[in-house]
Length: 253
Image (cartoon, rainbow, N blue to C red; front, side, top):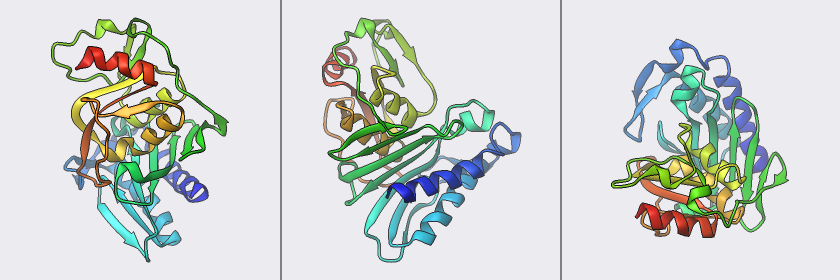
């Protein structure tokens, strides 16, 4: 799976690089399976990825643009966001990624390998169930034991009656897969998205990275996330180290 994911990321990076920051990249080409507009740069990323998967065969791929497709006799399912951070990429803002989550079942809980590549730099986050998480091949872990007044958190949205000043810093970066991987690597203390609108395909890979780095990922209500790996499935997300997760939940509920 590692070599397949690397080949897919290489193909996506090659397709996206010449389009990033160009006006044509943001042209709407139609509606994706997730109900949101497909931009030209999304289409290029997805087509590049699917060519690699088709050549590999025996795999089911789920993506936000086309939905689900199977090649050969599928053994695994890959939940893919070929370009997370489309707006950033189309405007030349250097924070966008390809996110790949490999599962041996049909829910987020069945993901056993994940691969997230920051496309403008090539920096990569990987995780394997029971074996930990890595950044560019080096082990990573979440930052624990920090109170909310010391936290830098990403992805805070639409929390009713909530004062973001309870955190030291709030960062909204426009690429949830990378924001969550930054939690796994200890760069952010937490990630909060209470909209119940975050696509499962956006966070399936990063969820495993955080958990394998010693963190905890739940819904905004603190429940286990067991959504199916489908293009139209969405959820709220709170992710952090265990102690930090508890502290965040006390201020966002």
